[in-house]
Length: 190
Image (tube, rainbow, N blue to C red; front, side, top):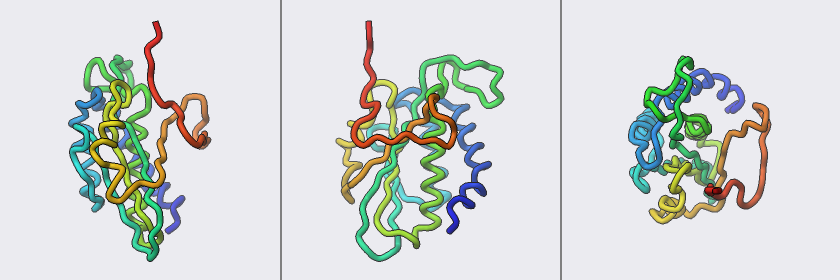
């Protein structure tokens, strides 16, 4: 499969998916609409998942078909929104007053879904396993630890986790890589 070409083919659909998530922001551990929409898309693409994980979280999994053990890699996407009011002039703006996707989690979910769709379509070309964690409550109390405690890192055991976050300090197409912890917690300063 020509992955770059496939990305270009599904890009308009992914933009619409992202805008749909943007219109429906939900606070941490209340991502019911978001989780339902993610599950609907995963079902349509034939991707298995576990739900609920730590409340509203989802753990999806795709197994490669090529021979060989391969590693298990997880891609994490957070899905909660911030308690902010959006400018109503945005044509795909928030329909949930007092909440908006100001931090890019709508994009994170859409990126992970696009990756899952493509990896599902070309699973005959790779071995190993890819898990997709759609994590609740990244902005507040933190949904990562409850998901880990619920067992998402096992069966099969996850060897590597890739977290993603859009950054306003980087141009589209640029990436920042760091091994180890990055943006590991949010704190309050008084």
